[in-house]
Length: 202
Image (cartoon, one colour):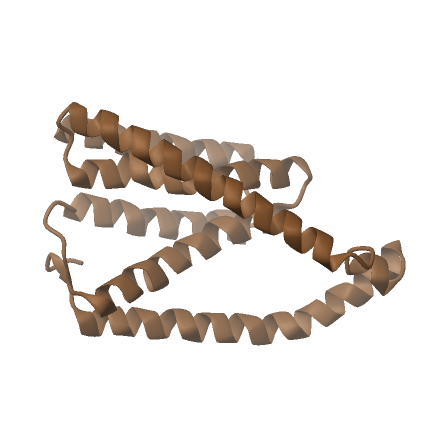
């Protein structure tokens, strides 16, 4: 993105990246999944309980229903936010970096809060990290592979903050494999400072 565009060959390269990542993840999950299922069986009961009480169809339908309502809610949020923002003359880049980003991430935030309340930190981290990987590789990759993207309003500061956020999270989560409240507060304050800098650009 540094040159203000994302060429089709670059999009193809990113698309290959998401394919390689998914294939590798599935292979690793296949091995780890069997071990986790055995561990669950030893601690809580039989494999039928570990697999969802023998009702995979019910849980599949619940997941689909949840995804549909999340998509609808985030869509309505985006439509309303864009309408208000454009009414105040805010640029498309600022809308994308703030309101659209928040709207598309709101379902992830809701899911993460629920998972965190149930002490399921792996789901929270996987949700955030996985969606970031998917957005960079798949969303940008597939879109650019179809048609070259020209980016004129994304500034080096935006790219720098994105890179800094990724680098900052690594040592936080590498220590004891957890994210403390103080570290979460630091990340939140960093984001608020970034949003404030965007507000000064408008």
